[in-house]
Amino acid sequence: MAVRTSRWPTLLATLLSIAAFDFFMVPPYFTFAVADGRYVVTFGVMFIVALVISGLTLRVRGQAEAARDRERKTSALYSLSRDLTRERKKDKLSEIAVKHIGEVFQSQVIILVSDERGRLAVWSTGTGTFAIDDKEMGVAQWVFENRQAAGFGTDTLRGAKALYLPMVASSGPIGVVGILPADGNQPFEPEQVHLLETFSNQTAMAMERVMLAQQAQKEHLNAETQSLRNVLLRSVSHDLRTPLTTITGATDALLRKGDGLDREKADELVRTIHSEAERLNRIVRNVLNMTRLESGAIQVRKDWQSLEEITGVVVGRLSERLKDRPLNLAIPGNLPLVPFDAMLMEQVLTNLFENVLQHTPPGTPMELSASMQNEGVVVELADRGPGIPPGQEEKIFEKFARGRSPGGGTGLGLSICRAIVEAHGGRIWAENRPGGGAAFRFLLPVEGTAALPSPEEES
Image (tube, rainbow, N blue to C red):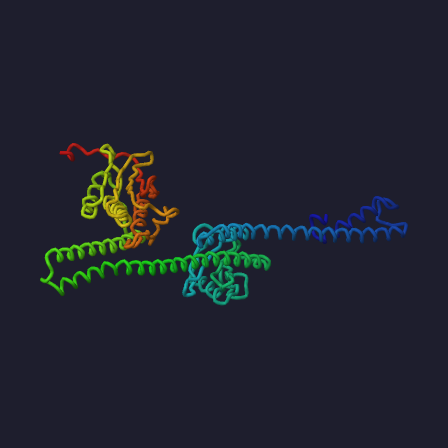
């Protein structure tokens, strides 16, 4: 009886058992009279033994129920902590807290998180939450500012319809949890409130972890941006100084000597000014292009294009600088059309040519070829220069990576090539050639087939 009921039913069952023993087993039988006084002592011993056994049974049952209750609480806390640990987004953490608290306490839950000014804002909406009006928001704001529980079932602001608990982390309060019980007339027990505070603090620590990680990432990005800005300024200022000095010297000679210079010398100075101005233009163009690529301002607009035509445009534009270098173009006439952005692909080929011109001696032969492979079209620009230092095949595509030759550029040309090619869904790489020199290759994926022009468009 003690296993399933409380103390009083157990006492009643004990008395009934003694009475039944007296009625059926003690002479005179079938009466409650006792002829022998020793049976009274027996009844007393039976009653005391039954009391002791029932008390011990009730205590064991209470301990078992307490153990099961602790197990449920531990399991609920473990489940909440496990799910919170796996998540890295603050809004998802709110959804997890709402789900677990609502299931354990049969309640609707709302999470409010403070902003930079210390004002609370609803962070969780949807299933399992409840609407909050200005009065309830005022109670939640009081809880946040005073770090004390208030609302339904407490002695503070008891007129609120929900119980509000502060979410306190190691750095201080970060928000408030509102719990609206399913039975609006039955407040939470003290043990339930204690468990709710534990749930609230677990959620607060998880949110603090995510916010600290986001803050650390933001500071890291700021530091990296500042470092890149400093490197860019140093690189650009150094690269601008050389052509500007040359231009200043040439213009100064023209201004000072004027008509005193012979025609050949004057033409040489003008050509120098023009060449260095073009160099300045390339530096500024690469810096602007890299900035636009990283900011996402450049959009890839693919169209089916002829690789042979785009190559001809680039070679024609660089014809003056390529005049003393043997160039072999090996682009098959049956090469299919390739989907790419014409302007961006011109930039890739131009940067690759300029890279070869900067890092190979005059007269170095070059070869531009293209071939169709399973994945798409592979374009290759090869030379017979000094090649790439071992282990630098990947690093040369990083920003501000410079080669060994003096008078190089900003170190942005190849990184721009990689950014453009990857934006097309392709990849770019470099390797040394057998017999000397380097080869730069990039792959452009070809998906589908080019649409044939209609007879009206052909005419």
